[in-house]
Length: 520
Image (cartoon, rainbow, N blue to C red; front, side, top):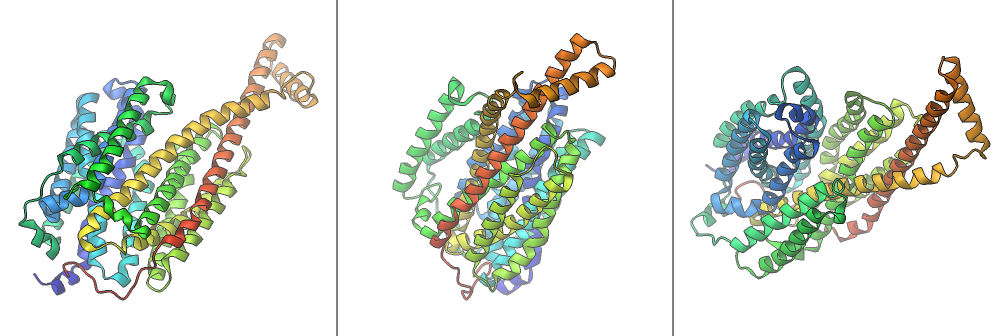
């Protein structure tokens, strides 16, 4: 098949690689909503059932950085098809799991198969489109990537309420089947992979072992740290030591190995390193803010899960609408300047959220989320395009794997730090506010007397009214402390957006004049 024929199939290739990528992205968030239902059905505790999420993330994190190496080892088309089939099959097994232990085993398998889907899809898109259209290619990919977090929780909630939690896994079957058939017809290995296909690739066993233990340990620490009170838990200390020792050894092994499983030498490219670090911080800001907003609404404002989802959804829609325009602008404009504007908009949105109070209306929460959505569209697409534009094609699979890994780790770090800060700051503000709740404070006396009188007029006995009024005042203090804690974290996230602006100077402006296209 000639490269001219392949360029005709550009949009077919796009649809083919987007299907499994969307399937994987939706599956990352779809299970969150169904956890309480799984807990009842499988007779599991809260701590145990969260391993349904953790096990998926751990195996995902292990496979992400070795995607490029696995694609070279097996051939990219064969590897992609294997991953789609394995992901679809493990989805069927997850849905049919009779108990929690079996479900976790199949989720590990599903996460391992899913880990490679996004970097391979990104690498194929970057090669299929010529350089001047790569911004549009990444915008299309970004639309798919944003589609998952918007649709995932809503779809998961609807399926769980109307059918059964098992159907959140079964819905992958038709998508996986269509993706496999399309992959067989429309995806082809580029010449450089076919040329390398005949040579035996030495397997870097030490790299494989250290990567698995290092990334697995790190993901467990980040996911379970706050729950187990960090380093006061011997479980967390053990996994931290395993992660640190393994990752330090991994760097040494990979830099001295002739055929490394992950090519860390790519980080000698200053533009690639800077882009990856920026993506790490953006992942930190994005995931922590997405976790905090519904938590604020549900715990302090009394919103239902569906109403909280309706606050997040318009932001995702704003991202979807903005992305194609950003992709088109990238063909003519400097991507670094677009990223800079995106970071400033992201920081502005966080500073708006920092001023929200317990009296804020629905729209007061929606607008900052929409502004953040526009900012994220202006960060993701150009940052991906600029970071990966300096990478040679044979290393593209490696580069996309590490780029996605750093976004995911940034997200895990963001969620872990924001959960810890929330717990610590709530305690701090509660102690500070409680100091003002004394009989000597005129404000306290007025509020307490007013509440007590209201209760007495409603027929509550005087002695009981005292206790109830005290409880209500304490409830107010807790909610106010919670609101102050959330606001402080939004402020920190805003500063994080601003802190990475100087790194944009290290990014190299991509040239739009090179040749390109899959198979050249």
